[in-house]
Length: 171
Length: 255
Image (cartoon, each protein chain N blue to C red):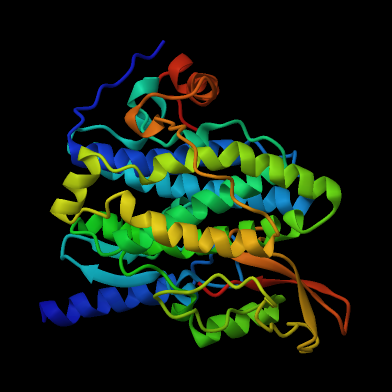
């Protein structure tokens, strides 16, 4: 009986986390982003395990607070957040629904992250990876800047519809 | 006025401080570009990279201070100059854009090679920090390499500035690869690589970029900087005065 109740509490917490938006990209929930790694019920409270996106991401602390606020508002408190660094977050953990929402929001979603291990720096004949325009779908795009409004995005321009857009970098 | 904190400096702590302080001090220098970069994209890029570096510094300094009861802010803001163990290279004034890009390339290449090896550290927390930081260092290296090629192989003016920056910065690289007791202890315990073993792969990657930029690395000189041993250039005190001022004047102040 205790086990069944505990499971349902964690499940309800997962559902609540579906509704907690990322502060920088509010089209995505923290679950879409793939940073919620675990929800543990310790009986006397929930433990939400988060893996931060970037080392210097200023949103990390805001996310922690909004997760706790949402759980408290849903009557699922007390809860605490712990950070798990390893394995490091990758955009491969972003859900398919999340990638779709990102595109609808006007941000080109990340492709597969590069495999770990030795990656030579590409200098000669280097081209940024092909990124389709999230507005018109054209593959004829060019990168304007490696960094955008946040560390996780770069800046592109569509050569077909001429609209600038952001690309969520695969990492 | 807030007094200084004093760390017991066993070899493992010194090894961690050398890494954390490299990120912290370069992050501080890159932050100085905010509002001053030649175009807005680069303003954003430099401050984004500063944020990454400060995030890495926070993680490493938190880890370094934990056993002795110090937090990241105490280590970042309340140490005296000789207790910072970053290589001199990262504390040099930011210079012009060519100087900043070349230094970023030198440091990001070095950090990338270091994080790659630290990802297998016997210290699980350090390995976790490295796994994350490695992804960021790759972007930093790529960004700097693009600019070094563009400026080195660009106009006569950008080329002149690149050559000047190379002549100024190159002698400070030697320090990065000087082995000492701190490195030997880290290698023996599996904490991380010795300084010397990064030299060959670093030179190979630097040569590749410099060749594409049509630049030639200066000859090896006998000059040795000593920041990793706490003996800094005249620029460090000025940097620390600015960086520490708020915490020293308003102890415990937070945002």
